[in-house]
Length: 464
Image 1 (cartoon, helix red, strand yellow):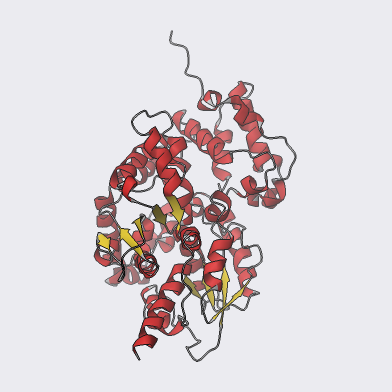
Image 2 (image 1 turned 45 degrees about the horizontal axis):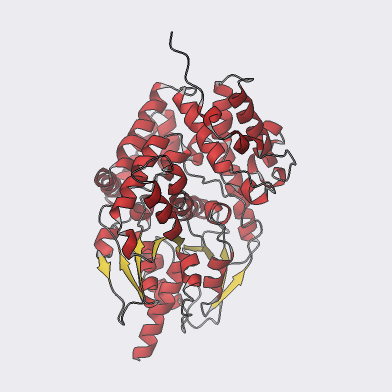
C-alpha cells in the first residue's frame, strides 16, 4: 500500500512555522479577529492551526479549509509582526493543501474554479472575449432591460446575488491605447517594462494609459508586450500554486529583462505577488535565476517615480481630469473647477501595496507634489476595504461590513476625490460610494491619473 503523501505544510522549512512567538501583536491589526474576537480567526490562531496540521496533531478538515478562506489575506499581520513571520507563504501553502485534499470540494465550486482559474485567467484572448461580451451586455441596454423586467430573478440564488457586483467593462483595452514601444520626446534616460494586468485592463485601461504618460513625462521608454498573461496572484491566493508558477514563467518570458531598468506595475495586489516570483520558482532550475532577477526589477509605479526623482508638474489636474479621465471612468465631473485653489484629496492604501510591498509614503509623495491637491488623511487608510480578491463573493457579509467601516471614515474627510491604487479596491469602493447618497459625488481615481492629468494641463498651459 502506498503511504499517504505528506501534507504541504509539513514540507515547509519547520523554522517558518516556528517563527510565530504568539505575542499577539497581530491581533489588533486583523479585520476578522476584530469582527469576532475569536482566536481561531486571528493570524496567531491560524498559524497555530497550520502548525498542528503540519505536526499531524490535527487532521485536515473542512473547518480548517473554511478558516483559511475566512482570512482576507490583507497581510496587515505581516506589518505588525515583530518576528517577521512570512504569512503569505503559510497562507498560500495552507490553501493549496486545502485544495489538494479537496476539503471544500463541491460540483459548483469546482466548475467556477475551473472556469476562472484554469480558463479565463490563463488565456488573455479568452478573457478579453468574455470582457467584450460583458461590455456589450452592459452598454447595449440588455442589462437594464433584464433588471427592469425581472429576468435576473430567474438566475440561481448565487448568480442573482453576484449580478449587481459585476465589474463595469470599459473598452478600448490597453492594447488599443498603448503601442508596444513608446518613447519620450527627448532621449530616454531609462527603459521600463509595463504590466497591464487582467481586470485592470478590462476595467481601468485608462489608468494604464495614464501610467505610460507619466513614465514618458519622466524620460522613460516604455515597453508593453502584447497579450500579457495574468500575474498569477489570483491563483496563488486561491490554492492553485501550479498555475501560478506557469503564469510566472510566461510573464518572465514576455520581457527582455536584461534590457529593462524596471518592470513597472500600477496594481497593488498584482505587484505584491509579482515580486515573489523568486520564491515561487525557487525549485525550477530553468527559471530560478531569472525569477530572482525579475523580483529585483519589479517596482510599483509610485515607488519607481520616487526612486527616479520624478518631475513635479506645474499645473493642477482638475480641468483635464474633469474633461476626460473621470468621465471615462464613469465618475461625475468634479464639482470643483480649475478656478478652485485646491481640492481635498484623500488616499486609501491598497493592503498589498502597503503591507505586501511596504509602499506607503511614495503614493502620498506623488499626490503631495501635484498643484491644486490638498491631501487630507483618511482614518484607518491601511485597514482593508473588504475587496480582497474574490472575498466579496466568498464572504459577502464580512466584506460589506468592512466596506461600510471604510465609507464611514471616508465621510469624515470632506474629500472630493478618493485615490487608491488597486483595481479590486477601486471596484469595491466605487460600488460603495455609489450606494451612499452622502458620498455619491466623490470621484475615484488612481494617483497616476491625477499626475498624468496635471502633466497634460501643463502642456496645454505652455502652448497658450
